Figure 1 (tube, rainbow, N blue to C red):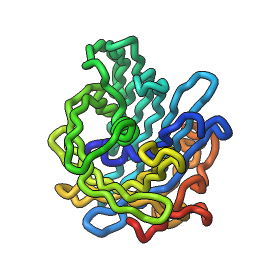
Figure 2 (spheres, rainbow, N blue to C red; figure 1 turned 180 degrees about the vertical axis):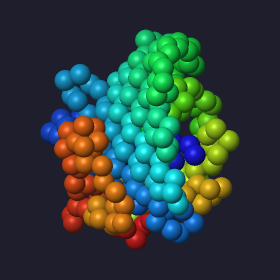
Figure 3 (cartoon, one colour; figure 1 turned 120 degrees about the vertical axis):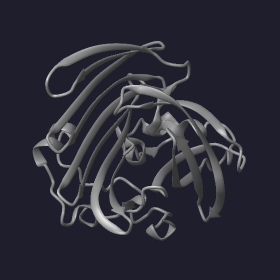
Length: 272
């Protein structure tokens, strides 16, 4: 199961908007498989103006039958989207895997622990490689004609490797105050479809100042992840590992910094 499906994030396309707040987005996603609620994902996205770095933090928990999958990711990139570092932890049953990655130019340095031993690896990555949870951010830095493919090199953080992918804007629908983009992404042999609520600059309509991922689906696996207005809609009947969340996020996330949870926002859950 590719981590990419759950690498959901809110994207703010002008770092200037982040000067008044370090945390720019925080939300809960309800995960379903073939219509059945199987888990949740928590996403936080922020920008640090002093160091000009983006930080994304995410936690995923899925339970299918007796099988439990937990994954967390904390990643940093500069304002040019170049990766700086990430820490990944994945657990499936009793199998545990951690990756601590740092970047120097186009060289990725990894410390990988499989629960038994630690190994160090260095990999050369293509120029322009970025973290996959920044894909929409990178795409929207320039005009996006419908059906024009965007080829990219993205990181599969759970593997400590990079792959070539292709994404394109499949459809665009205008709404009062924002647009809804339907983006198709092909990565590692899988296809994902995302819906984005995108807000344009009031003075420059071709410049985007804010966007949030409303939901993502994988047609091949039947998995969907949908942004919800209240955390309990994502976590009902699910376990919340409070100690892990506090360690990862610095506290228990409340999931209120997003368009659905904000009563003044123009996008609503009906758009998903």
